[in-house]
Length: 229
Image 1 (cartoon, rainbow, N blue to C red):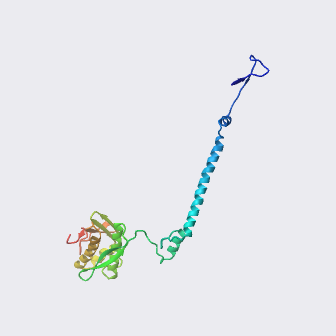
Image 2: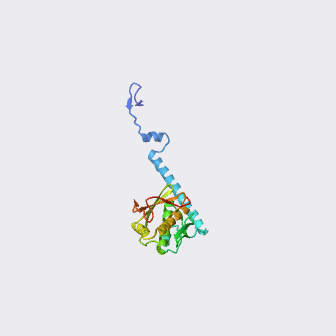
Image 3: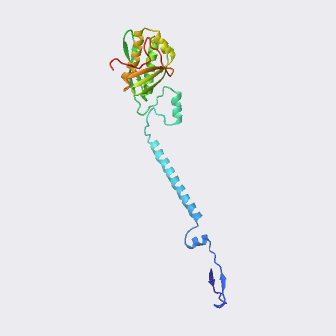
């Protein structure tokens, strides 16, 4: 409360005048704009900076495109180009760091094994093993070594032991040949795996996810390894 004397009154008589000053008056007296105005100005400045940056980036990209800087060939750079590649199998897409690897596949002949080569893009070991063994099985089917109904279901590794899951026709195929022939088929599988995929040295055949009970003409209740191991 501030007390002021009226010009017509003496010191003994005065009016009491209440002066209530709101926040806006205080800020005005201090020389500052009201807070809402300051926030609006700062927001406008931020928007202006973003607009200038976006405009400048468009100019730079336009200059780069005008200079016809070459891009990498056979690489899809947009969803539209990817769709064109998918619709045109002959259009190749370059995979960064892609490389090919050759694996030796051992196919039973009369009384020996013949080495063949298969080229694949390597990845996870279990996937590579399954791809190589699938190629071996397909080759043996074509050459009449095993029945065409034989299927390789799964493979999984535990240390140096590889478990190969097959279907029932595989067991029937082994049971339909002599002991020597069955041993040659098993040797082809073991050599194909052990020669390409270290540290695997042994294989174990399971049938439909269960341990095999076959003991003749070859014993599938135990793991197999090459004689030199």
